[in-house]
Image 1: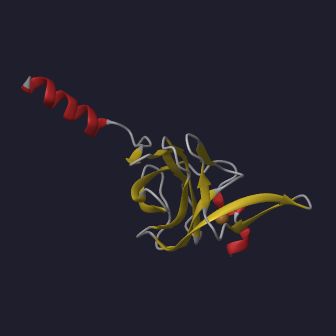
Image 2 (image 1 turned 45 degrees about the vertical axis):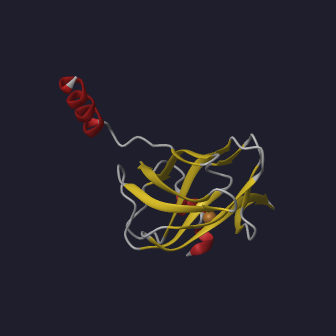
Length: 158
Ligand SMILES: [Cu+2]
């Protein structure tokens, strides 16, 4: 038994920085992740899928992170052939028994005023606040910068 526990602990410590789910009440924050930013970037984006197993709709109303001066909930849309983003002033609804996806090119968590670049492999702590479920702490696992990182998508913040 002792051996098995020790082995499990080693496996946890040795695990690569994969995204981890977080849960609070009916709300699950699945696979939170982000992208590495360049050293000049002042903004970054967080992505995840929010699932609501409850019988009532919930709403992501705000978020904070110790790594950013401000965190907003954004959406993106194609406007005259240009991808633009804007804040969702009322937050993002998560339907009862459904989910809300935050993904590149769509809704996202905007980290504004980064205190340091987001580095691949890091986990960025954030607290999501829901109207019903209350606060939920998540860790955004930072993936590689990729071909179309937050810099390109979020030129509006520079
Ligand atoms: Cu944004």
